[in-house]
Length: 117
Picture 1 (cartoon, rainbow, N blue to C red):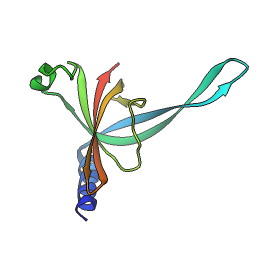
Picture 2: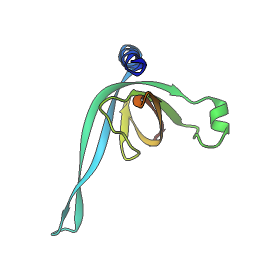
Picture 3: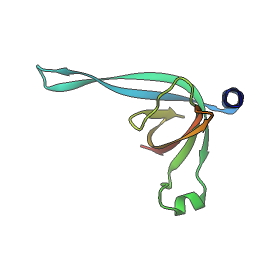
């Protein structure tokens, strides 16, 4: 019950105040025996995220790069991992780290540490 209310609230806030982003899932699909290559496809998901810079104290800790950004994404329906990329404001980002906010065994939001390419 609490987790459901938290998920609903997170979804509403990110939808209302978030910025439009494109999440891209990169999938290696099949091996082509003629060329010896794996064929890659990608799937794009248009959604919203709250985007914020890291603080100076975060950067001083060493795990955060100076150009890293924090993307807060509503977690429902996406199984995001570090192979995914994000496009925001004509900039492309790689996902460095994923933190999950969980309540009552349900994902509420994902916090993505992203680095501009």
